[in-house]
Length: 371
Image (tube, rainbow, N blue to C red):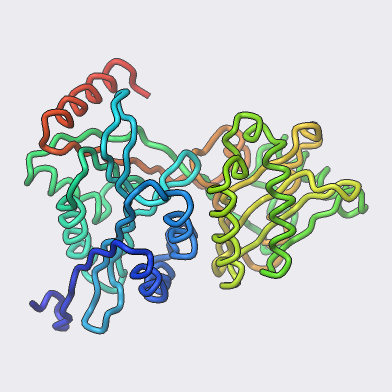
C-alpha cells in the first residue's frame, strides 16, 4: 500500500532478538542522527542496555521500514515484571527507563509523515501481547506519538493516567569561548565556584584528564567505578558500579560510543588521585552529561561542579553550543540557569480486571497525593 505522497511503501516489523536489532543498528543510527536524538536513543546505548540491564525482560523494537529496508520510524520497548500498587504485574515500557534518564521515545524521520509513523507505532505497541500496564515516557505535549497514543486510548476505551511532569536541564554555552560570557547565565554562587576551580586548574593544583580513546577506556572506567562505589550512591547500593550487570552495561556502551567518536570521560585528579568523573556523549555541537559522581571526602572542594565547569569551558572553546544534564532538573542543576524542557508520560491500563483495578487505584492516589 502506498502511504507517502511519493509512493513509498512501508512495512512495520517487530524485532525480538538482539541479532535482528544489531542488523538494523546502522539504519537505526542514521535515523537517530536525523532526529537529533540524545545518546540514550542510539543503538550503541540501547542494545547494551537490553543485553545487560534488561536480561530478565523481553526486549522489543518496533521498526517502520521503507522499501529499501531503511528505518523511518522506530520504538524500542521492553516487557517485564514490575511492582505496581504493591502487586507484580507485566509492564510494557520504553527502553532504558530509570530514575536518571528518560526512556527512549519514538524516533520519527523528520522528512516523512511523522503523524502517520506515530499512529502505526502506537497501534502496534498496544497490540503487543502480555502486558497489563503500558508506560510511555518521555512525551512532549502535542508531539505526534503522544497524539497517536491518546487516539488509541479513546479508540480502545482504555483507562490511562498521566505521569507527573519532569524537566531536563540544558546548559547553553554562550560566548564562543569567552569565559565571562560563558559564566554570565549561572547563579552568583555557581560562578564563584567555577572560577575558583578554573584558577586551581590553571595553577596546576587540580588536573582534568579527558578520555576519548577506546584503548584508554578500560583503565579509566576502573577509576570511574572506584569513585562510584565511594560516592553516596555507592553507599546506598545504587551507583553505576553496584552490580555486575551495571558495570558490564557501562563498559560496552561507553566502548561503543568511543569507537563512534562520540564519547568523552572527564576525570578530576588531585595529587594523582581521581576524585570525580563525568560521563558524556558529544554529537556535533551538542553534549550530554549522562552520569557524574565524586568521592565524599572531597565534597568541600565541590568536585562535581569544578569538573563540569572545566568541561564546559573546553566545550565552548571547541564550538559545542549546549550540554544537557539528564532529568530530573534538581535545584543543583538549576544553578547553572539552564534551558528547561518539560516532559510527561502516560500510563495505560489493559482491559483486564486486575489492570483496571490498578488504574482506578492510581487515579485515587494521584488525587490524594498529588506531586
